[in-house]
Image 1 (tube, one colour):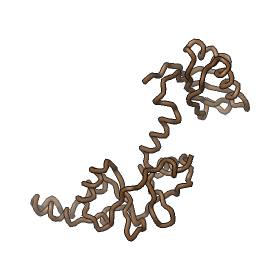
Image 2: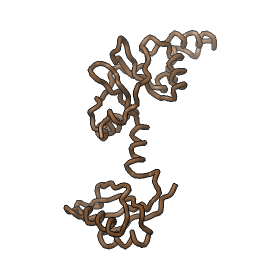
Image 3: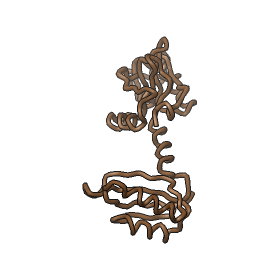
Image 4: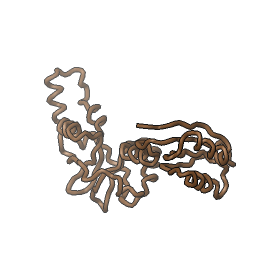
Length: 215
């Protein structure tokens, strides 16, 4: 899956000369926490609601509330935005975008085509995708177990589920307790807990968790 399939578009953006109070009102209205800063159709920065909320004139504590309000009204987005923007393109794999966000501790990435912004991919988009990948919104039996890290082991288990008239809703594999195993999360429908447990006992080296997940 690629970023272009999951990004938010069209994207709300702001010009660098917009007052921070106006930018903050726009972000609140649109329900967003960050937005690209665009000038003449080109990306020049990115600004978050925290950048805007934390902005303040120097020596603000010595000012009256009216003076403070006046000075705040004069601060523009260009003064608080991040200029060195990490970006991705529409054909960036979604997991690569997630890795970039995690490694750089940022919550969103502008998606560019050339020098123009065509969308934004955020942690919220990644969370929504995770819900789909794990079948979180579908009722079923969810199991976490260890499987021998050997070609064909997962196929044997999914075949056993199908042979017992079950349906695999979601499956994901992760590093196991050691190099010889993989930890697997699997969600299935069409089986009762006893039948699914019996299948797991025949194929898994250890069942860590088995529960009925219903919305």
